[in-house]
Image (cartoon, rainbow, N blue to C red; front, side):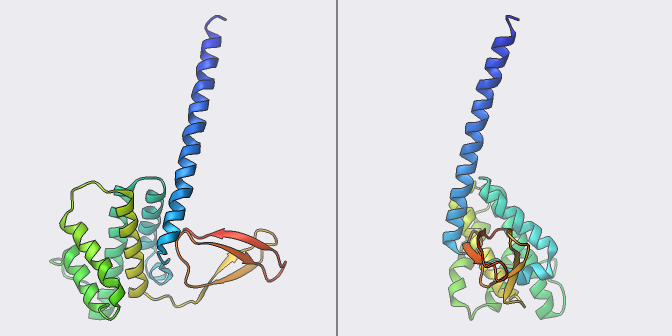
Length: 205
């Protein structure tokens, strides 16, 4: 019996530590969602229609950022971006990009293709800089910047064919339309046109 109490005490202390750890993770997760919402990275639904694989990359990039893994987030965002550029290249040029084309070549091609969108110029510069200085560790702010610019470029390369998405009302199960644009982390109060009740939505993936 004399050793049971220390075991129970140790478990209680460990449990308390875990509770504090999870509470801190939860706090940071919600804080990162707020940062994400501020940057207004558009959810590229048109790209998702063409590339389920690219959607997986971007989803994993998103959650890597939200859980505090900026290095993984940046790498996965780049994978989604290159996937999206390759798809558009094949649509425009009628053939897949040459194996000789590296990330920089593909990004330059996309920049030229989207040259009418002057607001994207800074995003392309950010992406080129990260490729040129590959090898360093990534800060959360940097990962968020890359994620935002990736989403903006993918959204322009693959404009969505829809103007709204359907969400399910948690009160009555009715499908409600939410009109684009929709941004990652956007928080919105949605009103159901059937039960007339409102419910909060946070748009992620």
